[in-house]
Each structure stands twice: as C-alpha cells, then as structure tokens.
Amino acid sequence: CADIPAAFEVASGIVAEYATGRARASAVGLENAKASLAYSIISGRSSKLSAATSSFVKTFKGEKMDYDRHLLTRISEVKADDVMHAVVNYLVPVFESSSKLAIACPTNKLDQVHDYFTKRGWTNLKKVPEENLFTAFVGE
View 1 (cartoon, rainbow, N blue to C red):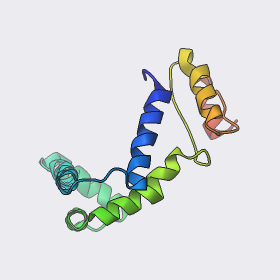
View 2: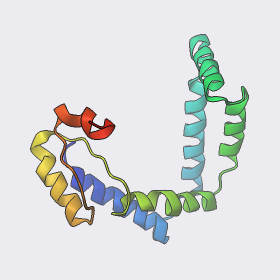
View 3: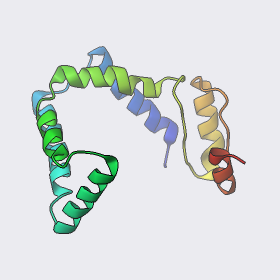
View 4: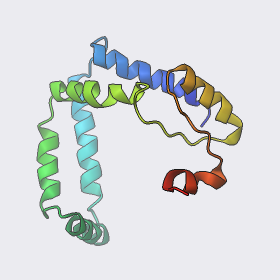
C-alpha cells in the first residue's frame, strides 16, 4: 500500500493503452496467460483433498462435475479479439468515476487517497475508520 494513487494511474494507463490499440497483447503473451490460468485450475485439483473440496464446492454451487474440463476448453478457445472485448467492456469501466470504489489503506494515507479519487471524479466517498467498517457496509 505504498502509493495507491500512483498504482491506480499506472494501471489506468496500461488498460487505456490496450483499449485504444496503442498496445497489443502478443500471441506468445496470450498463450502464456492461458497456460497460467489452466495451470492454476489444474493445480488446484492436484491432491485428493483439493479434489474432494472442489467436488463439494461444485455441488454446493450447482456446477456440473466436469465444469473444470469445460472451463479449460473455453480458455483454450480465447482469441486476441476476446481479450480486447473484455478489456474495453470490463476493465476500462473499473477506472471510470462512475464505477463503485472501495479501498482499504492505512489511516495515515486516507486523506491523500480520498483527495486523489475525489479529484478523479468520484463523489460521495466516505472515509470509514476500521472500527466502523462492519456498520458502514452492513447497516446500523
């Protein structure tokens, strides 16, 4: 939590570069991202305990038992155009002031972070001390 405004600026800039086409995902980068995601799914089922836990969670969520296989197939089908669609439709809006925003930070950075996001166009931001988090988000 070193510098939230700077991190937000950099992330926003990276997303904007991809969304506008000034930056493009390489074919190798896309394949590596898909492989990393597939590995994360597979490795999460690598032991008997994790497989059993996964099975229980799938049953609880109402997912089919072959959902992981389906998901792996779908991941392998992702193309660069699909990535661009996701960037424009799902990532760009995260950085717009019309989006919902919640940030946890140390108390000594609260004013700096609040001022930064207010200047970026977010309105009605609330500073909530740690001891009041429960009532702020659940109700009084």
